[in-house]
Image 1 (tube, rainbow, N blue to C red):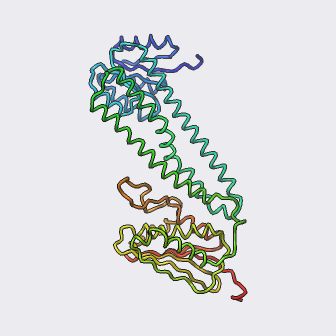
Image 2 (tube, rainbow, N blue to C red):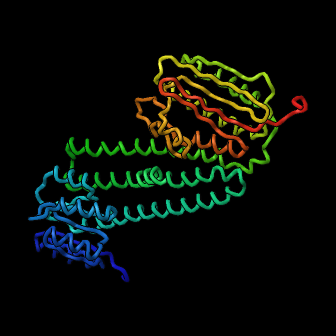
Image 3 (spheres, rainbow, N blue to C red):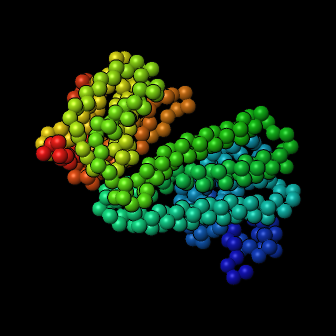
Length: 408
């Protein structure tokens, strides 16, 4: 082999080291030895091995401490712990600290060494594939971003796209790594421990069963990622300039209010006040974008009223000679002055980004108000936020008014 797999065996028993070395070198592995924890850490840093076998019980620096150092400095390096004391507590502690597998000494069948290496290297391969997949996905999204920023309108959402590329890293790591590695890891643990001990103790079964929590983490991460992707889809439609229409803002808002009244909002004992202007408010907009703005504002107000005993929501429109506006006002807790400006930053939110299974508290992605402001600006408009602690919040979307023959 041009680049043989490097194996480091850390054990204070000479015969164990020699046995591991002699056996594995028959399979063309390059095996290094260390007689205690201290020299093992030094050798690890020197050779950067592909896999480590480490005894749990050693003088001066024990195997658990060696495991902590390796896992901290190189978390993707497989560490297989070895011990002859037969205590399951040591196995569980090692797994919690990041061990990839466990072998009991004396090793009755040396094939277990080769099998353990093959399983660990397969797991490393999956991790590396996931890392490459994430890098390629980021490049793909960055390329798509450059394609989207081809008009002044799409430039308004460029920071959102860039933010999504960055913020997708963590949830994608969870989804891509856990989904593939969970079953492989669980099968390896079950298989290896049953081979060594036969029927597993209830305590160990409980520990293994608790790994199921990883699936729920994956599920929550998927839901959050799905929310982000949905927001991206809204903003990455075909050239929206072709969809711009001249329409009465009151008509748009009234349609959305009609939908609102058919939902569960009114059933939540929210007092709804509607104050639409009697004048014609002609605007040139993309209908779907204004609908999205309205939905974002209403959702933010409803979320603010989540813990409010008396809930009141006001929706209105108005105009002057040059502009018209849409506003949504609530009697929620209000927004502190120090964070008002931050509310328009992409991915800044005062809400939790995920919720517990037993809690229906609203969650947020931090995209709503940013989208409202950038979209309004793309039409030559703006957003005004007014809020007072203990009295509520009012958000107004201002758009240019297009005069009709009646106005002239």
